[in-house]
Image (cartoon, rainbow, N blue to C red):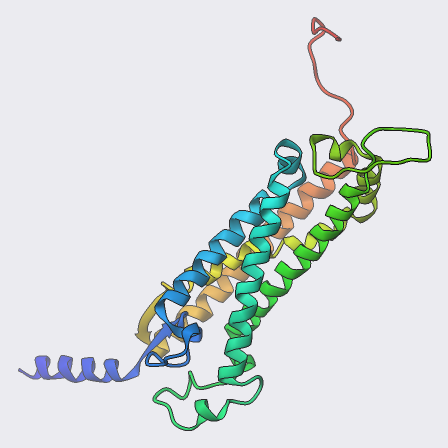
Amino acid sequence: MFLSERKASHSRDTQGNIVGIDFSGDDGSDSTSKEWVYTRWAKIMLRTAAMISLASVSMNTPDTFKQVPVLMYITFILDLMVALLFTVEMISKMYIEGLFVPASSQSSGGIDQKRNRAYFQKSWNYFDAFMLFCIWASLALQCVEFYVTFRCPLTSNDGENITYNSNISRDYYSCPNNENFRRNYGFLSIIRCPRPLILIRVFRAVLRLQLPQARVKAIFQRSTHQVYNVTVFLLFFMSLYGFLGVQFFGDELNYHCVLKTANET
């Protein structure tokens, strides 16, 4: 009798302290909002655009363009459509929620004060803005690559009349202009490295935890220490093997182990 009452009281106390970690909570300010950016179809469209962006950046490699040159046009068009869609989303949220201070429609009274915040008062919006910046920077870099491509001569000629490529062909990467560009400015492609993280926009929509607040804090504290230890362990061995590899083999591997009976041709 007393045990059941104790369990019941404990369950009531636990339910009162339960905190929901809803990673999709920053996607909308209110579940009853009539704004298009918070509707279900808009969220599905934005998550689909994130998947398209991931596929586009996966195809955006020099070897892929060398094998299938038309993909350079396809990836550019896909990135442009995704960038425009995310830009419209960001501008709409800034107009509805406010930039740094909540808009009057947001602060005039809402059920959840945590959701009624300005655009840059939500942590996930910083991530979305950074992803959008990476997409636009990637588009700018690809425009420069298009320009270099179109300035490549079709054939080597010693006359004054010089013709240039009107499309991208397989000979693009053998063009001297493109080789010089890749040699001098190839490091700029690093701006595409963070773009695969846009997949987090899809994952955070389905990640929800309902746990007591004390347990949530304990989980984060323990996981932080474990992740730190694993990261240090991984970086140590990656650095060690990297240094050893550079010292043993140098920047280029010019020698290979072959059989004496191998054909030299």
